[in-house]
Length: 348
Ligand SMILES: O=C(O)CCC(=O)C(=O)O
Image 1: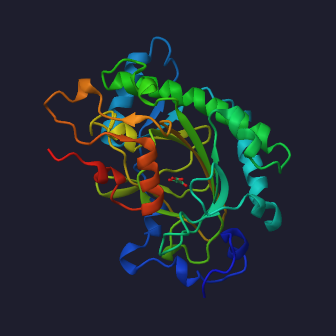
Image 2: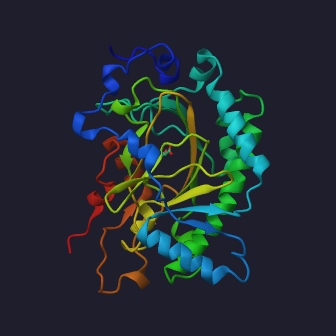
Image 3: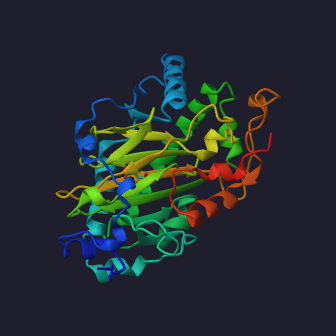
């Protein structure tokens, strides 16, 4: 059976088998046992005292996590619990609105700055993913909010508050990451041009055969850093030394990962820090939501290695490019284990 509805959410509750367009080849299916048994995980970093006496220790912890895992979790990050719970509640309400209301925001055009869609890129992909998502540009905030859904009634206010907080946290983390690379505190800030900030609200409905498909298959993020909030349902896995580690949800914690633009620290870190593969698994019982904030360069920003990290040893690993060129490649090529960075490798 092929999918006949624009959105997965409205189809998922009517099927007791996964439609054929969602089924992955046998060699590329998730191992659900791993999802529930994995005990090792990515580092947790306490940000308490980042602006005071603990700064140098925290920066060392960040350097270790970015180099070895490309991922870390943060606690004591300063984001009020109320802001987070409003964000989660309004997102859930949005995905529970009647189909006709949600479809007002539907688009399969990745260049649109506000859109509800499904899977990843329905125009180019061969196998669909068990996900609907609302994608929002968030910077500059005052230019974006008017485009966002007006229903639920508190949506714009709750999401604007959350994205303001995420911007503050992103800037703090980018300063810490710059310092952890031995760069000036504002190095990455300047390298991002006028800056960009996007958000996705990922909605993964319960899936009748989660062993056959993914919410999102393995991919690396194209942006600078991602700050991910997940609800209480596990599903995120991160590749570490050839093994998929499940990142079990911990209340009041965010998950941070290095994206391709920092790997390349400019094209920044010249491969010192890794933009690591991760994926989302689904389950048969509970709806799962994750809300990544993608902090990124502005589209016109020229991405190049930090000169301090290049010299001759090691030579620049990537050619220079604009973020817009990179972003288009990411959406048009489809999610893949090979990062788009390979398309910009320097011929050394
Ligand atoms: O749902 C998750 O935990 C991962 C989401 C993700 O990787 C993405 O939206 O790019």
